Image (tube, rainbow, N blue to C red; front, side, top):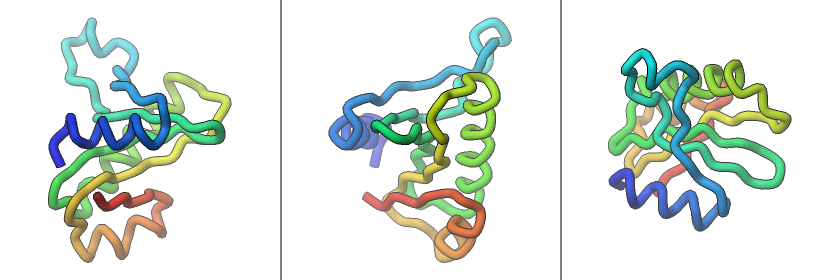
Length: 105
């Protein structure tokens, strides 16, 4: 899926979806790390959108979720997610043990 398609899916599922910029990102000229942050009533999902995702996406999603938690200190639990059309076998094997959800669209 392309970014716009993924964002539309998140909006339909959650009602709230946005791009999060790590604190100081603009001042340091950095690219925002997350593709999408979505919320429901109970959780915040930090979502890495990756077509044909491999195991590297786990590290990215986990890292960005940790940065979000550290910078924003939300009251809700934060969940790292990889949103993909074709997950690799390694990604599926390792994600659960690392606490990263994989959503296949």
